[in-house]
Length: 291
Image 1 (cartoon, rainbow, N blue to C red):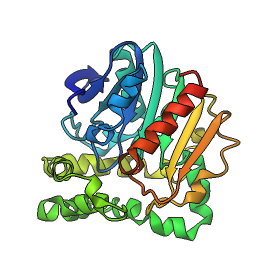
Image 2: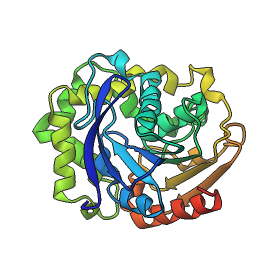
Image 3: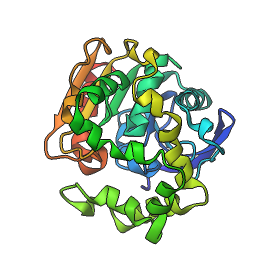
Image 4: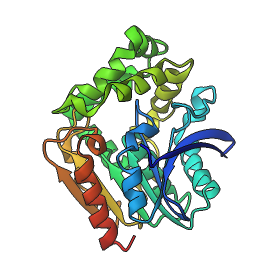
């Protein structure tokens, strides 16, 4: 990670710690998921910088070394998309490429849907459009079963106790189970994520993403059906233990310029497990889209 710089910025009233590579006002903002951190993009930041972008990965609110506001209401999608807009502003972005995985992808979708800021490109990994997810959830018992943790996280206190027990070993297992080669996660990687989870108030903040947005995830917010005009690339690891590959279908009503690239044999942690292939897919699409 020698090409990556770390610093803090103030945005949307909070202090964010971020990693960045490259220079300039063409800004690629990369958003991580649960239970991750900015470290999840360590293999993409220098690569995107090499393509001429200033690549920036923050710890999202509540995560890692970024500020953790108190209370469930501080983690609604409205606050999370406002964070994205404010980060682009403080970074002085002229062109904006938004990239997200897992929860970061959901926030990226919402940012594009709400048009929080004009986006030149959107790349999402292993999380579907909110409307596609809501429709699939209603008609797929198997996806409902795969989403058990969303319901479990609504219980007060118990999820925090279990996920942080034994030095947050469940957090480590979330990464290492389901990947073909667990050694892609170094002991240092896993220690960072376990330590982050063990920080005071951190796991509650992370789980509050689920608690604050459960109704919207279930399809209660009809604004999430708006059509996106931003050119969109979806990269999907087909061996995702949490999300059915059928969630890559049915995007015609929701995205006017949509490209899908599926990676057989790759898990939910797609940009870490298949970093070189993900980077190549991004570069090819960005070239074709004049980004």
